[in-house]
Image (spheres, rainbow, N blue to C red):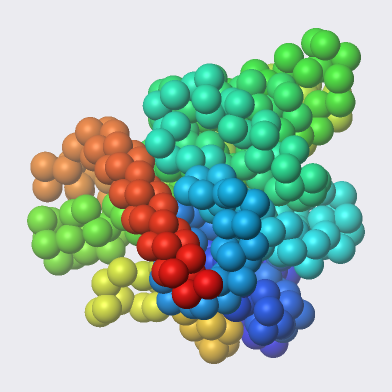
Length: 361
């Protein structure tokens, strides 16, 4: 049995952190679903940027959009919604079979809105309506300005993938925003079942401290942070306040492990996959990591519910002058800026391709 199936049987959802038109047209995504236990996918501006740069699969669609007078962001979202709607339809049987627990795809609001609450809310509602798919998450960053947008989106019954979370404190703030949206629906007599995941970025922690800590601590910070967050996650699920919401028909917001591709060439290619094996969570992984996992025959133990030795390891990082709270804030800020950079590059690629296709017409 493939390790991908073993992980699925454990109770963790395997999602692909990639979407391209070639993946859809070639049948590769369908094969991953059928053969590698993939039950969802995520996307971001960097993924679409690479897809547009490296493929001519979008050229005909861009030509058609240009005839409609579409440019820039508007043109991109039409392309993205087309891809993600097709992917959502592939995952729809899984979504229906699991009663909405699994089978999701994700689309990000413009990263330029990361610090604009009102515009994020408006964009989330518009994109969700445009897709007209029950299994599309709208990705909203868990920044200070994003938190009220998460609450409002949930209250409006827009499924949300909270992104750019790094620390336990950031996770708890995002979970609180989700729960407030759910509780407002309960108070208003509305159906409180609104899908959501909270995406924790893991490998970027280790990239941030690479070469700055003792060798014994290399590639251990992300996993220690994950242990701390996992303990907090399970703690929330057992709190009376959350259980009252479940009793009214609400669903728990699932924890999602993101940025789980190994960045250190000297480390195992499934370092984070094995370390983050945990029931009732999601692991969204790059294509190369998914294939590497399928080639491995074993997984090892699942995560400790109490976080294992995470606090001991984090104390060692503190002794090595790593301020986790300050680094979490920096990583979230850098992540938001990185997505803006990718977004600007993406729009530049769309403009360049549009101009080239106009000239060739």
